[in-house]
Image (cartoon, rainbow, N blue to C red; front, side, top):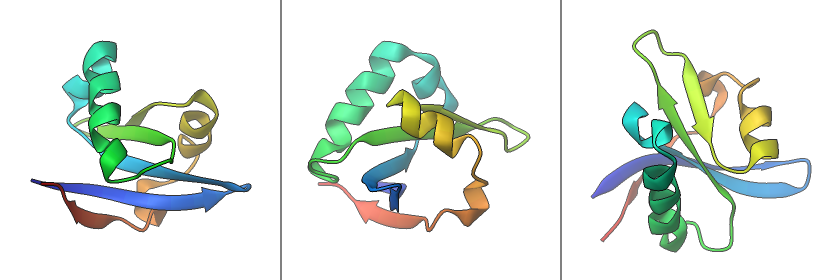
Length: 86
């Protein structure tokens, strides 16, 4: 399985962002499960999920301080990378 994600370091915090479908961030239980499942790819890092609506507007789920920070960052400025999960 492949995912789109990024590792960023801001204000002394290293964290991961993973792109998911909108229904994942809209369902708290599913979002928390997704974050746990991505822990093996991004060990020891806080993970924030990002989904976009049909107009490209992002929505974030995860640690509140990081989600709030990312809501002010254009997704086009994120260094996205493809990761493979076994």
